[in-house]
Image (tube, rainbow, N blue to C red; front, side, top):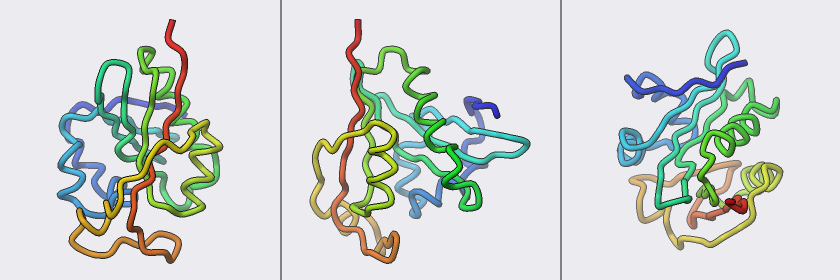
Length: 149
């Protein structure tokens, strides 16, 4: 299992990116200025895009694991890698839909709820977004913090 940084042709992973964020113009808002990583084991199993928001603050904009590879530890491995890779990261943020499966995953990865953006999904997407059979309305932000020395 290997995690690699992708510096060119990030759109080659669009299919995987669309699993986590299903509207391409929303992905375009962060893809080029974000850093992309892929997790491969023979072939690509997972990917993520991270942006630097401020000194010591990074945001996980997109993380996706192939459906047949979910619940096998790839997502958690990717998040743990990011926290090590960004040594100056005191806070790693992630925004997600208000659904138990996503919230449980992030809690298991050490995140705690931070704040919400009301109507994010209804205001920013051109169609209703559903996850686990539930329409997403608010974005739930979570954060994982560490003390920097």
